[in-house]
Length: 281
Image (tube, rainbow, N blue to C red):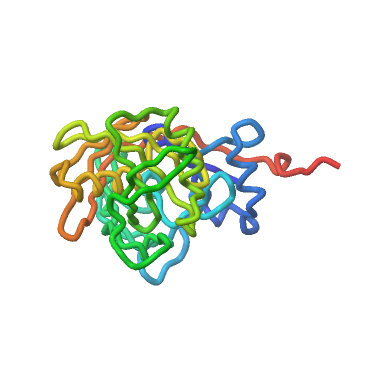
């Protein structure tokens, strides 16, 4: 049972090729594999390449709690680099189908950088989804842990709750992130970004990721937060997103289409022992 481990700005994933696995992954197996003490340790699992009628490759993305994610920007960059390393792609653009939509990717700089056309951001409540009447969810109030925040909701194939603040911190994300993730108005839960606008071309975010927890970097979070900053009129279309793990470049086009560019680093490859799945008597 082979694995390949990569990180994108400290957000690490394991790539598992279905051809190397004798049976489908169970939620328990996913939780064990991702556990940093009892398994390999990662922020998620990328299962692919899978067959697709819509794209050259298909990909499934699993969170460390065993749940499935619709889309992951960092995961897509990592999976693209894996395909490049395995000589499944070269320098051409190629499509990847995810449950959150089809994206177009290209590996640059000898594998060190990947650019992904992430799709379009929507602020419509019924697409995100957010409960209540159909509307753009912009500057609405939400209460968590006794504190009231103004938030914007967005989707780029997966749900996001973006909270602009004058100051942000990891402690803030760890305290309020899990409360906001599971707020009743988000029927599919949500990713949470605490956003600080630095200037017209730079923003800073702290991230609480649905199903994963506090995260050093996120491509879809960068896309959503940059789109919100632009939607609110605080930033130009070209934005550098600063995170604890590093920086991602976001270009916002017509209809809030997103072009994301960021680094990928290969960490290791090896085999997973079946022994880690043994349940004690």
